[in-house]
Image 1 (cartoon, helix red, strand yellow):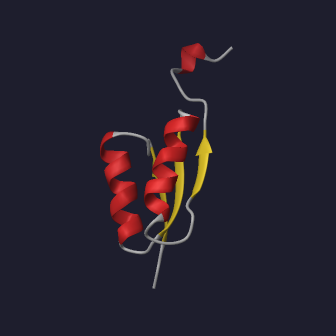
Image 2 (cartoon, rainbow, N blue to C red):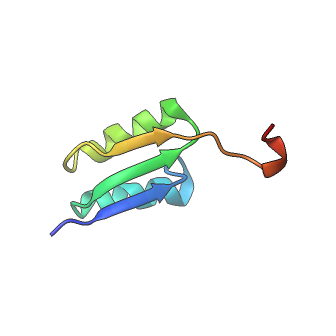
Image 3 (cartoon, rainbow, N blue to C red):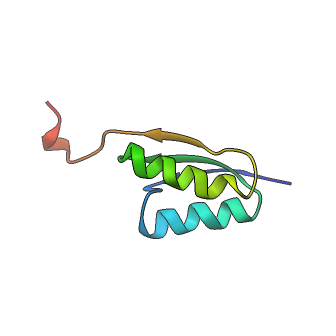
Length: 67
């Protein structure tokens, strides 16, 4: 039975590794990150294991950056 897993920071480091690991287990993924191009790469990497993961590029940053 697959789970739905939300991974933030999915384009590098632990987030990217977690996304790959969950995809390899057959879980359905919702990926969130700031870099749209890199997010597309991670989605493609994870898609080889099963259904296309959902991905969303989100604007993030420090609270003081928001105006």
